[in-house]
Length: 246
View 1: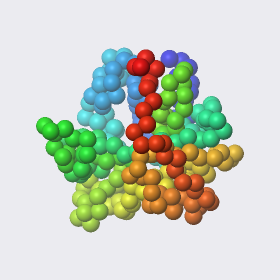
View 2: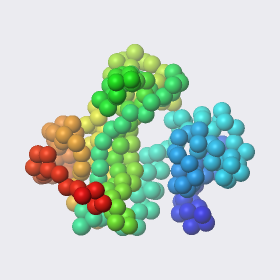
View 3: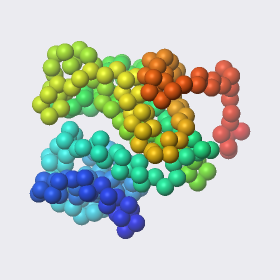
View 4: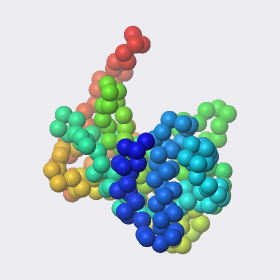
């Protein structure tokens, strides 16, 4: 636990020295510890239970949920701190990135980023357009102890154009309506920022599904970092059994 705390200490330097800043810094570090420690799942309610039970913090539930939904955390400064803490990020000399988007179902009507998004994985008894956040995620693919893992590197909330045009509260950050970006533009922006962050400029390999794998993503990337090689597509329906399932 002490080693984890020492690893997470650099994040505290990015918060202000005000009372509120010190409080946010304190909660931020312990929330990360609650996610890492295998005490319970990472649902917000379970994280709160971890802070109160595992770490003995006196956390007001209402203030904690406001903190978890805050749009004031400076993620553009916090993410690079996380990138610098990765000791060995390359696989076969390349930076392997996984790109996808996900649906995060919600119930509150005033939560940032929420809208009625199409869920192509919805089952028969689930709504096709749930009230949810749609998040574009970029992660680092890396084998750890013989298994592939995906370490989060960046994320963006996707907002529907109609919600932005209507000026809905769910599409406001710091009181201002956000600017529309397509998922392709968000993905390209995150990839380019990560590519520019590392001074050694390692070659990139982006792993994504066919929805992202098209000219909407290749064109903005090739304009900034040069020629983009076409994707390597395996033979259709190729099956490679996982060890232990043969």
